[in-house]
Length: 206
Image (cartoon, rainbow, N blue to C red; front, side):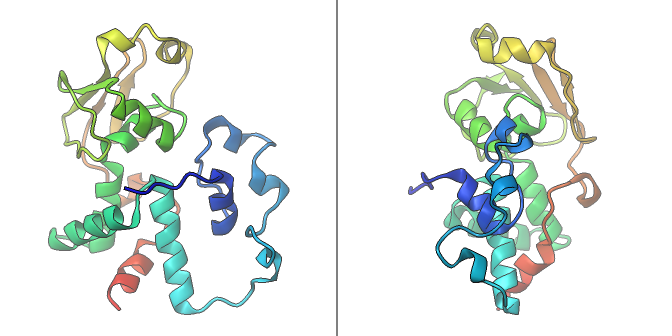
């Protein structure tokens, strides 16, 4: 499957807001959006008028890039959300939030979702005591996500034990044990990702 390999900062500039794709750099003065707050390309500063379809498309692209998904992955997840009971847009966000790579990021075990995806793929985490190396794995309420015993001595995870981590209300973390637990499925109010999910639903409904 093809994956975006160019500069991540271009994606933030294209969407006009921080997508937090570069970890700590996004919180510093080195952030490209702080220096050049306009879309990349020679016509970046000339773009002004955007149609309704364009706004809906940008919202979908932004959400897809927030969570690091490819187009087919995102569409498949939307179709799954549409089949579930409830509001489709909220279902979509919940499915995105409960991906294992996102939960690892939310627990503070990675500085970005991209790093979290890489750590999961390399087999550093267990779910309920069993190794899981699939970033798209869907966690459930009550699941315990932990750093694998053999990985806990690596410098990456050792430094986490000295950190103060703030996590969303639907998960809890024990930095000393390097494990976290999903307390409940997140509600829309507990998801702080700045997206207008109804616009994505409108786009796919055309």
